[in-house]
Length: 365
Image 1 (cartoon, rainbow, N blue to C red):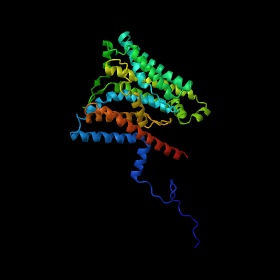
Image 2: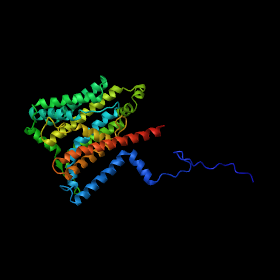
Image 3: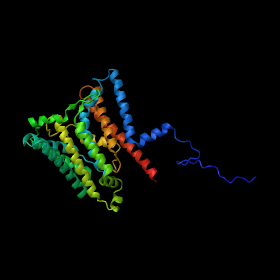
Image 4: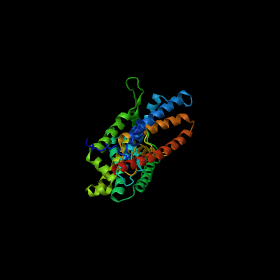
């Protein structure tokens, strides 16, 4: 009989190991969690809530960590998430893009909004539109310094942050604006009841955060500007060869960050029922937590990588973690441990981004 000329089947896997077994479900899950930041954050969120529930049942907390408490914590979640989305846009533009002035823009825009409503007697809707335009202008100043004059974003936004904070403080002699029309703005951020026995949630979750999140998602995923933003952040040289306006894309990213900071300013004025000159800078400010949330949500600090969903879930994780820390520690110790938690999360998320980035580069080869 003639010998068969067929060769044995090639069992070499994609990793180059002949006859290697396919990865186990646990290994596939590990890869999913490493490369899909949203899935990892959802898992961490579930673990966090389960752990806090266990501490609650054990009597280790100062108060109940229940659905009502978690829903009330969304009040601080809304402005932080909006500012984290602003940071995402800036960081996506690449070249180490970062905006340290978002908290100062919240303070200054909030004071401008307070003057319009509480001192000058403007109607709500014109005041709201003017406040958003004012925030956009502040962001455009950052964009001009970075995209046109070529300043490093860290230095440019640090300088404008100082300037905006100072202007907010001197605008009303370091005093808040708490006139009756401004106090009435608290109705913009009151708690609203939900059906099916769900706990009340802050109104601004639906009136401010959801529209902002949807619009940012559409902007980065369904528009030409979004494609240009990712292209510029991924490879600026290639973007220039493709005749993209790198400076124009970066300028718009900073201007949009100013617009979102204006939205956060309106929210904070409603929450406090007062326009406070230090609303975005008091304590550790809003800028650093917003940057932490963006990086934790999978936005690569080198630019070009990031998803809206990751930022939103990361903001929820940080806010519910902070809320749990406040229930665990008495007095002011909770706020100090919040800073420790933010630092640990920032280091961990940066390491994860680095590992995921190396994996993307290996797959691209």
